[in-house]
Image 1 (spheres, rainbow, N blue to C red):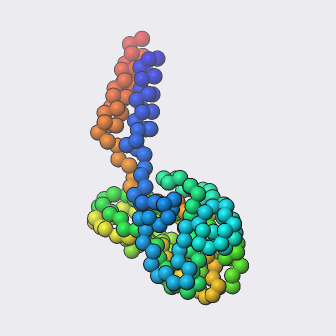
Image 2: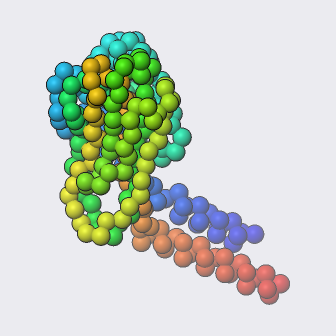
Image 3: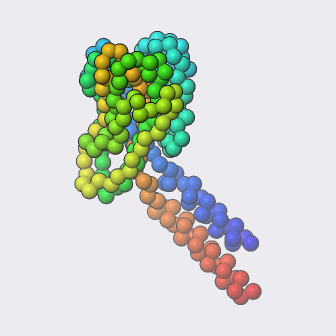
Length: 223
């Protein structure tokens, strides 16, 4: 019984080791520090802003008086906490308006990346449409219009890919309005993560655990 317990402990320690924990390779994926780490492009009338959740304030700290509830999209791995802020795209003129962060990608590594998006009701009431896209290193993985989204509901978009060659590229959001006034979007919990690889110390714990399991099996056979 003791050997079985030790084996279970070794396996639990290995699985919950920080070596297996995914890390967000993007800086400030939940916009809790404004747009630190991001570059805003194409700004004109209303540049992207960071709004407060559940705020009745006007632009730029709120969604023109409509309180937006915290991101609760199903499927987001939660590499960054929801926090109290989100990014708001609301321009009626800039085409396109962008938000970009440069990342380093390794060859042969599998990456998972994604974000959550929300369409406010007051923006949805505007007569003109808007489009939104997301890409990694020039490869688009999300592209939708305002009519594709439900109102006041957080949605999760993601993709997984492996790069054949190393690269330094951009994680880019692009917002395009179709007239004045146009519909708008809120995004949060943006992430880019490499699938974790166990460290040597973790492999040692796994091997020790399997050894203990083998010893327990041999003991049962002799009994």
